[in-house]
Amino acid sequence: MRGRAGVGGISGDYTIIGRMRVLLVHHADAVGPGVDTQRPLSDLGRRQADEMAKAAAAIGFVPVAIWHSGKLRSRETAEAFLRACAPFAQFKMIRGLQPDDPPEWLRDELGAEDRDLLLVGHMPHIARLTALLSGGAVTMPLHGTVGFEKNEDGNWTIFSDPRNPARS
Image (cartoon, rainbow, N blue to C red; front, side):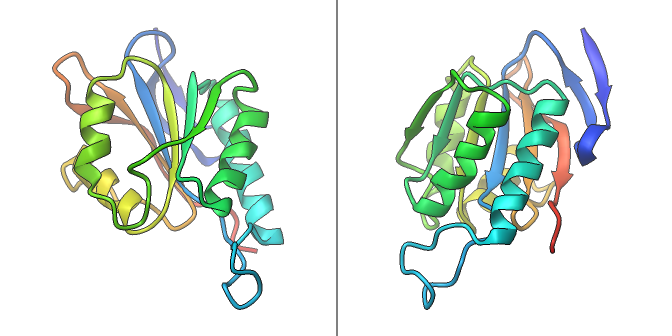
């Protein structure tokens, strides 16, 4: 079954049941290293994470697994999606989502997956992964999301256009 999403700023065609989907997320706004070296989400970042997660839930995106980089700002962003979209999803830190990791690692991992996934990472890696999956046609927004669906031929199409959360 196919539909058209347009709720909460996430838009595009998507498949309700069928092909594997992945939502790529650049972590929400974090405090600077001068404030806290662990770099937790700022007040704005917590609002952004909640907004992005609610928008994903509004289009019915329910990932089976939520993967994050292990950095605090990534984990806290991922937790917002866990609460809003999939409280029973597998939730874990994985290799391959650090800022300087090669995006090919995750592209290959995603190619072998058949479950709906959500990945929360960092610039420039998440932007490079977005470009790799889209063939350069899409740019990852700062503190935003882009959703892809894997076609039967293994290529990727967009099911959720790039989306930025509130800036204030």
